Image (tube, rainbow over all chains, first blue to last red; front, top):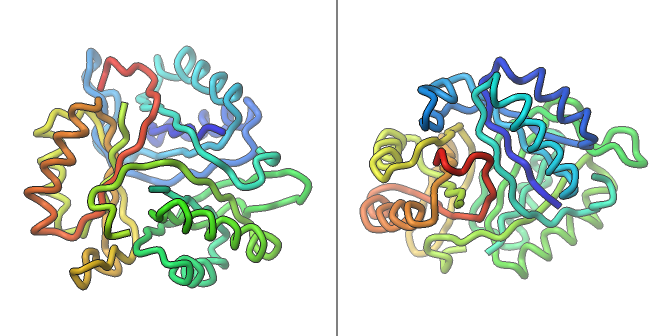
Length: 95
Length: 95
Length: 95
């Protein structure tokens, strides 16, 4: 299974919750974090504060869909940092 | 080493702290999260809010014991999401 | 890419932010956690409460530099737990 982590400006939270449910994730956590964001070509991908961090457990195919959607539809509009890692889940049939 | 993450209803916190110490983990963090939980056959594995997230660093054998105990003794009683991943730890001799 | 997680006594936060920026990380999150720390030969590597958890995305070489610096310069002074894992990042060119 994949653990997808999404760090986003707090403003983006409702939109991301909607997407996470839409792609078929069965569970997620979200909590407030502070952070300074990826610099790169845009000046401020993430604000200095008032970010939220989502953690979503999904099968690989759904992780891919989720990341594709974040890349094409959300990154142009919101400050986001997104990454995934491999995890072993108890009762993976539930996700 | 293994990073075991346990998302649980806040109610389960003291019981999980006790278990984590009992299996021999030397350190953990815990913080409050919101989240909606794994659906599956039971209606609500996790409440919508008031969850806590534990992160525990342990050697593989202890991770296995911890996950086995969570599965057999805690999942029937509490709403839990549990997963583990591989990490490389500074000073692994301490865990 | 690497996800480096640093759990530290809150007191160490400004010093760690400075280090994270110094080694060239482009983004991090930080949030408060409770936790009890690695026992080992020192009595209390981490206080029972008032810790912070940093999560930093960096290329492997910077992760190594960051962990080396934490080991040599920060662990003697502060209570720290540090570990890294592998992640796949959207737009890795930005980190």
